[in-house]
Length: 68
Image (tube, rainbow, N blue to C red; front, top):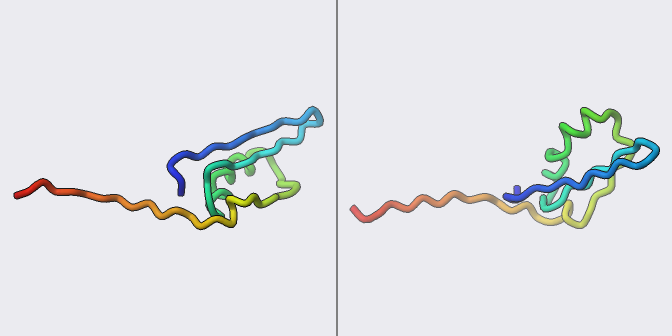
């Protein structure tokens, strides 16, 4: 998952809420918005962006030991 995650939330005059997940490649974007979607109620529709189809970046931790 990307280090920086963003959500763009728009509330329309009729009360509908639009959530757009940014900076999260792959299907993990659905996990980012899941809690908010559940608190708002039923999801009316879902559109997948180009980022959804991008390969998720694998996070690797590197540890370096100083010479001994």
